[in-house]
Amino acid sequence: MNLHFSTVESLWQDLWGSASSDCGEQEKGLSQSKLRLLSKCEAVQKFVQHADYQFYQNLVDVLIPDVLRPIPSSLTQAIRNFAKSLEGWLTSAMQGCPEDMVKIKVLCPFLVRDAE
Image 1 (cartoon, helix red, strand yellow):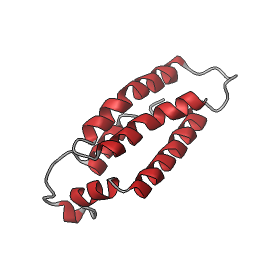
Image 2 (cartoon, rainbow, N blue to C red):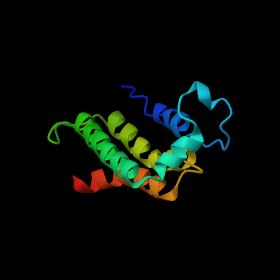
Image 3 (tube, rainbow, N blue to C red):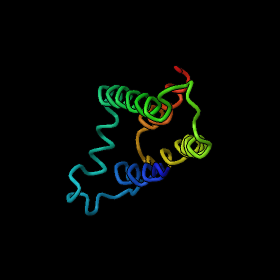
Image 4 (cartoon, rainbow, N blue to C red):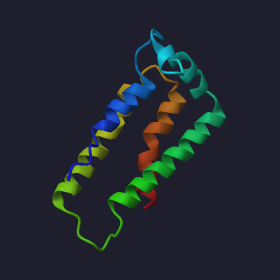
C-alpha cells in the first residue's frame, strides 16, 4: 500500500512557499505577502486551526477505522514516518510566516493525537 504521504511536503511547500519574494506569484493567485498578511488575522488563524483539526481527525478515522482490526506493519510504519516528518515539513515550508500561524499548524496534529 502506497499512501504517498511525502506528497504532503511538496503541497505545503507550494502553499506556504518559504521563498521571500513574490516573483511570479500572480500566476498562482494569492501572493506570499498576502498569504502571510492573512495569516496574522486572528479569525483566519481560528479557521485554520478548526480546519486542520477536522482534517487530522478525518485522517485518523480513515487510516485507523477500527481499533480492533489488525493494521499491517507496513501501514503502521508509514503512519509513524509520516507523523515524525510533519513538524519538520511544516516548519520548513512556513519559514517567514507569522509565528502564531506556525504554532497552530504544528500543534494541531498533536491535539488530535492527544484527544484520542
